[in-house]
Amino acid sequence: QCMHCVHPACASVCMLGALHKGAHGVVEYDADKCVGCRYCQVACPFNVPKFEWAKAAPKIVKCELCRHRYAEGKGAACAEVCPRDAVTFGKRGALLEEARRRIAARPDAYLARIFGETDGGGTKVLYLSPVPFTTLGLPALGKEPAPALSESIQHGIYQGFVAPVALLGALSFVTWRNRRKDG
Image (cartoon, rainbow, N blue to C red; front, side, top):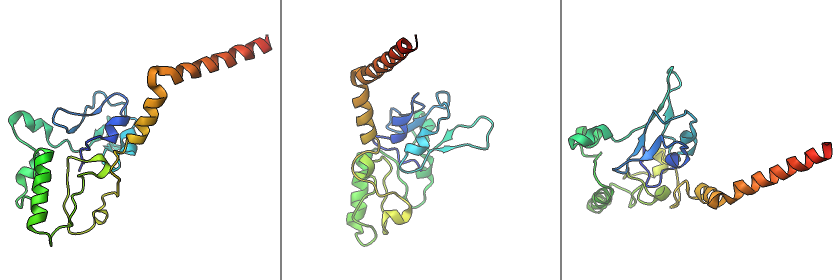
């Protein structure tokens, strides 16, 4: 189950935008843009994107909340067929309200916490549970989105393209100096 992070690490590391946030906030995959680097697998704190190793033309597979059904005005099929309303579909704000309502209505049935409200910067897939979320296999994440540190470093280094130009200048100088010594 993809968590459809508010600030997805998989999309952050995808160099060609094969993984990206779509119009509805769903993390979408475009196989035509994918180069198969699998950085998304490494970056995802939930270990969601999977590579189809056994196929001749492999691609990354992950839940996209049935985005092909949006044009028909439908949501995710898993929510549509769930007989107990354990899986629901909707906008994040409405889902948070419903989660809070369920916790208030049955405080003995759930931990007083919604996984995904702030975890890893927030997710669009939310969980309620009577047991600790780590017991369910969900990672213990802080409130910062997973790509926050890497993007701040990356954007700092490439700000105005100064660092790459400086590095190229330094390497050019070293090459020029070494050629002068040899000549």
